[in-house]
Structure formats: structure tokens, C-alpha cells
Image (cartoon, rainbow, N blue to C red; front, side, top):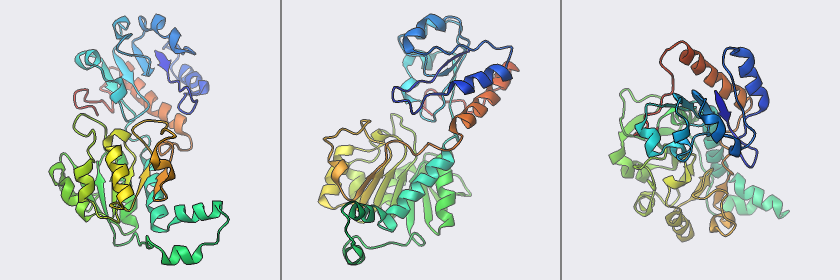
Length: 325
């Protein structure tokens, strides 16, 4: 098995202790963990299993024995290239791993806008006691209870958002390709064709959908125009779900109440982006999935699947490579 989970910034790099744990738990499996990407091509020829992002379109022809790739993320778009899609290689992901953390992040952003915590923090940075301004100047304070959330995507993350939002008295309308009945954990489930109707009703719009050919720039100029002028858009999925230029224009015109962005079209967000200085925007640097024991739980998930693989049983979290999730 070849493990390669390395992040140049060091945030999403798998600790060596977790690979050592796999070696202890699976003594019959030979684990190879190269330190740098340049070391990967020479090791792919012997790999039956890849954990992480070792396989690229350029190196895929070298992986003649490869049977299974597991990614420790829910989004797999960067790993999908035509040769892998057409092959018999099974791709699995970390669906469900980040659900609780990302849902709490979404609720945290909703509370931030409802209680104007971002504006209070801005005033703190200026050493200004803005009690009167925060009370009397727009936007007004909000109640979560009785408000409406349009939730785009009802996978593990979306479901976790729905549970927490409803516990706070929020009406949740989930928009998805294949609505289910009964609609739990949402209050209602609507088809993707009714996205515009849901946007028009919503105080909050949370994007928790995967990035595919069908969802790229799902929220564009027309969709933003359907949203209420006091509505808040929260994006936890991928930056490309939103037409960022159209979002900036809507915010500049006051056609949108605010945006909470954990992901952006380009990451890191360029210093030149006007989003940085907009008071009605809260930017977090793609951290909604971070949580205590993240890597321990990620390897727990992979280890369960490795046991199934070695036993010849069907794997969990298999990705539909053509659908992209």
C-alpha cells in the first residue's frame, strides 16, 4: 500500500504516527510512505492500494497493479481524470468524516450574522464601544428560531447541518437531485429544479453540495437575484459552486445581506479580492472540516475499509466516478 497525503502548507498532511499505526494493525501489508512527490512514480508500479493523492493522470500508467484509491476528503474532483474514470480502479472517499465539524461551522456562521458578532469584532479591533451603532444601525439583529434555511445538498454534511438548524427552531428546506419522503432530517425536500423557489424564501442559504459538472457556478447572477436582500449565503462546499464575480457585485449593490465563505474560487483568496474588506463578509480559510482527532478518525475509516478489501468484501463510501461523488 502506498500512502501519500502531503500538503505544502502542512495543514492536511497525514502524521507519520498514523501510518505506523496501520503497520502495527496490518502486519501482512507492506506500507510505503514516501516523503516527497518526486519519490512517488518509482513506487506506483508495486502498489495495489493508494491512500491519498499519489495518482495523477501522468503517473496513472505506471500503476499497473492498482485496484483501489482512498481519499481522506469528501471532494474527489481533483482526482478524477478520464483514464481513472474509465478504469476498474475503485475510488472511495471520506464521506461523513467532516460532517459534524462542518455543520457546527455553518451554525457558527449563522449565529455570527444573527448576533452581528463579526461587526462587534471589527469594532473591538478599532477599540470602539459601538453598542448604540450595533443596536440601531442596519442590519438588524435576527432570531434563528422561525427563520428559513435553504440547504443545497443533503449528504452527510447537509444532514448534520439540518439536524442542528432544526434544533434551533430553523425551518430547513433541502434542495437535492432526488428528494426523499419522509423529508427528515429536513422539514422539506425539494428537487433541484425548485432551487430558485427555495432561494427566494430563505433567510440563510448553505451550500453543502459536491462540485460536479452540474453544480459548477450553481449560484450565479440569476440565482443571487432570486435571493432576498437580507439573506446570507454560506458556502462550505467548493468555491466554484458560486460565481464569485456575481457574488461580489450583489454584495456591493446591497442585494445580499452577507456571505460566510469557507471556500473560494481561488485558494488562498488573492489579496486583491474585494471580499477581504467587505464588512458583511466573513471569510474562513477552508477550515470547516478541521476537528479534534481528525487524522485518527480518518485512519479509522480507512482501516475499516482495508479490512473489507483484504477479506474480499465490498468497500464502503465507493464514489460514482462518472457522477463525481
